[in-house]
Image 1 (cartoon, rainbow, N blue to C red):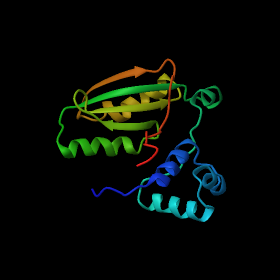
Image 2: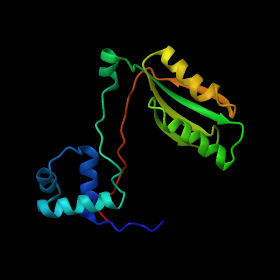
Image 3: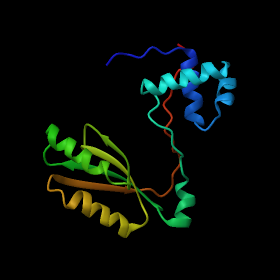
Image 4: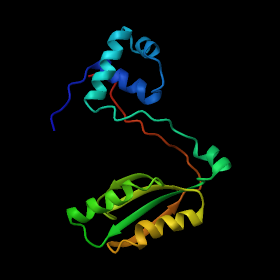
Length: 163
């Protein structure tokens, strides 16, 4: 993979967008000290280069839990029987289509995968485990850790402030 050339302005833009992607182009330009047209052009380039995958809203799980559920968060370790490339990819594709799986990491050493899962309640979590893990003959071990409190949450990638 060829490294992407970034300058200080690119890093400032990426840092600002990680904090608040809803900033107007005008506000973003002011914060990084460039003109609005330059800002717009640079953000477009960062998106085209794949540095900005997508822009999303981060919802409050605690607030939603009181309204519609999703009060159960679990970190789940998965160990497969077979770890050949086809088996690993098949598992990744299986969890890709499950909305309750928020994050999936292939890890080493130890388990093959770590998942972050949100479910409305324990019966909902049980149904998910039966769909994803019990029905899959290649899943050898499932170890779940249930969150009692979220102390920190973020998706920010630490970036230098200049190059």
